[in-house]
Image (cartoon, rainbow, N blue to C red; front, top):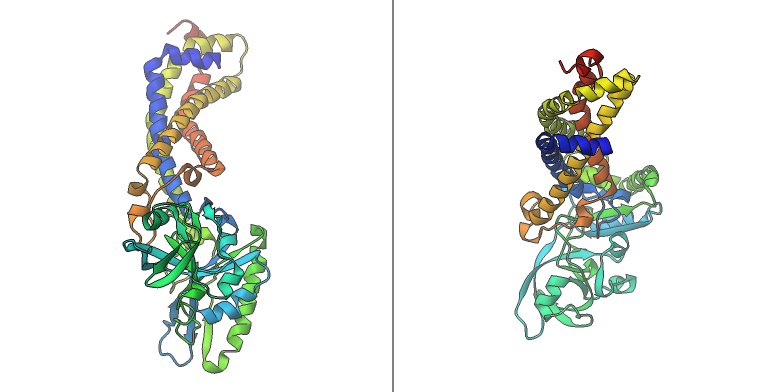
Length: 425
């Protein structure tokens, strides 16, 4: 470490250019990594994404229909009852309206407030982990009774009542009286399945009856929470078995189920946005991702390689003396490589700090919310963009960048002729 510090001091310009160049390269690539991770990595209130299997849509066909298009879209209430709510393998199963409905909220004596409302069941609060500022979620009894109760976001509660201390207070949702049971911290619309301004039991709305195709299709999406990812296979087997039983009972009506390999993990859902096609080929996504990362690493690596070569040329005498005292070429190569890696790691640390600051400041500008959602509700925080995997990626990219930029100069330096190095030729 003393040697590294001395080398940095002896060649301050080259050293700082190398550090800044590394920082900019890691900054660019880590912003891309964070933009990808926000789509599928766990963060509150979707902290269990790694244990999710998601059935956002379903597909069916009928023997009496011409063509092969079928019906594709959200799930109907009848299907919820016959399939999803009968599942025993998941730790919890929740159904919720696939879209947020624009509604008008109004407190007594107040002015109307435009908001997005999501209908959920009582298990929704087990699958998601909202942070309650006051109160609590509605429970099974309130859901089964179809009570007009609601959970509000902090911002919505303040708009309606001027405070977040709103438990027990009443308001109207599209002229229907509702009562507040709890208030939660605001949710970014980057959390597609949990974002809303108000959450109500879907049993208190018309969503149960607003289906089509004999209510096989409707307005719901489903998340199955596994005890751990190792249970995914058992859950999928149960999913397919229950659908087979369900559609066997519908055979006389001509209905058939189109699987499309559902349900999907959160990562697959993030890249499979259409109901009428099967899951996106993740291998192609990975190839494109690594190709982009490779280009972002290779270009600065070429420039940094010349800087590293210049820095090592000034250490020729030192290398010659070490070789004269019996140091092997492999030990010289190893030492130079790890000295260069320390410099790269310093630049990488600076780069990831810049990426975090840039993400926090420019969240709505660089992070894209789901279809149909305004960027006004897009924000990021540290829990969303910093994970152990984030630091793992940063370390990996630093190592690769160092490998690309320092290997050849270090190898050439380790083969320096002893006499030529000491005589300063």
